Amino acid sequence: MGSDPEVNKQEFLAESLAERLARRMAESGGDGSAQRALPPASGSGSGSGQRGITVTERQPLRIDLAELEAAGFVTPYGRPTPLTQEVRAVKRRLLASTLPSGGARAGIVLVTSPLPREGKTFLSLNLALSLSAERELNVVLVDADSRRRTLGAHFGLAEAPGLTDLLAADGRGLGEVVRRTTLANLSFLPSGPADAQAAELMAAKQMGRVLAGLAAGFHDQRRTMIILDAPPALAGGEATALSLWAARTVVVVKSRETTKRNLARALSLLQGCTDIDCVINMVDAEVCGLVEYG
Image (cartoon, rainbow, N blue to C red; front, side):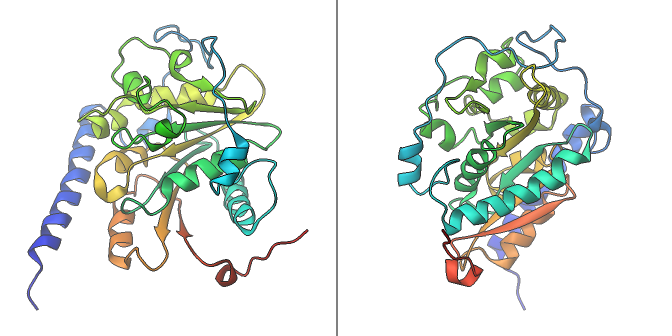
């Protein structure tokens, strides 16, 4: 049988991205195992060495729960639905598997998909909202997709400074870009401007410093969960880079649309994280066996 030139081209591009990231990691003096031991994180200033986040005083970012619920999202105190049950099941698995692991990756969850429009951002926001209902947990939702900035647009912060500014070490501290919200234990880190070197920035040691600062929390005794909403794995190298830092990766696939081949290719690019779950989106409730109760 003859080969498909377009498929071969796509596979070559995917392999090239992975190889470039591996080379970048080698040049920066780190690899998947070495980066577990991270340098002290910055606090409100990039060179302070202070652990934890001191957020700049500003009006909390308003989370309109009624609007989110009307748009089909899971809200912390909304009416129980089959979707609520599904998101809670994913949440409980993540809580059980990521926080007790210890080390620099503890509590860091990467959410991605093979291709665009398969539901990764929908799941990222739903997970963050559901996690915010936990009594002894801080949650940081990170828009790590600087090309689309869907989460930032949703919160009116698509043009705000954020992750890429921190990774470029432009002098900003975490406290200047992390936004507290009107949900007491939920914070949001915008993506910052698009950067052609985003994948390389996310593979470098500064990404580890940023994550360590976020994980250190807000000077309280709560543990912290970090949800990274990344670009699709087959659309660039960012998800590959971010998998190097995650305790667990969640890959969202769309029922009856995501192909086995694209899923396999995506998984091959996410091997920086050894614990990967797949979540099937757009499945009928009857198929899942979930019913409304109460």
